[in-house]
Length: 232
Image 1 (cartoon, one colour):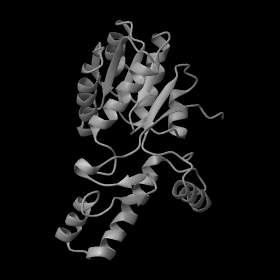
Image 2 (image 1 turned 180 degrees about the vertical axis):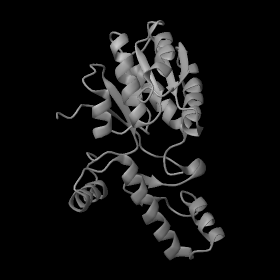
Image 3 (image 1 turned 90 degrees about the horizontal axis):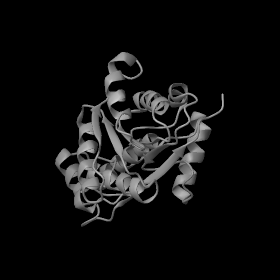
């Protein structure tokens, strides 16, 4: 897995929520899959070491496609006087859910996990909601090291758009597999051994998104970005 472990991301979110946002009461909304449940469980552990505990934990229930399906969970969260919502979900649902919660909860702040990216889908669904929306990222186009600058420049030239973190991760994954193939060939067992040795017997792979290693050797940078809506 190229992205950071759920527990590391959850600890990063909890530290930001407590130390920068000074949250006193928060809710977690999560997708009912491996990503959402894993991040939710990591947040439980991370906040247990810091306090407070989540006031509400709700599965994400189609806030865009079927607003009435999400109404009960939104009302439960709003009734607890929360000042923060953490959304372990994807861009489309996170934007819709964030907008609907911000309409009901004064002074709300929102944090999205690393599956939330700022694009036209986010803008159209978050709309003119006034709540500050932050999102975790493993990389962003403003990183100033030479590898990031070169990648972002080449991506813009070829694709005609600014790259997101997910695209930088894909680039690193493809280039890493090419490097592994050059080093040990294409046998699956040799490839797995090569990847497992990164950060140990072999140095980490120097990717655009940081030094790539796996298992206990994995140390990936994380950024907390504040999303500013793009003007139409």
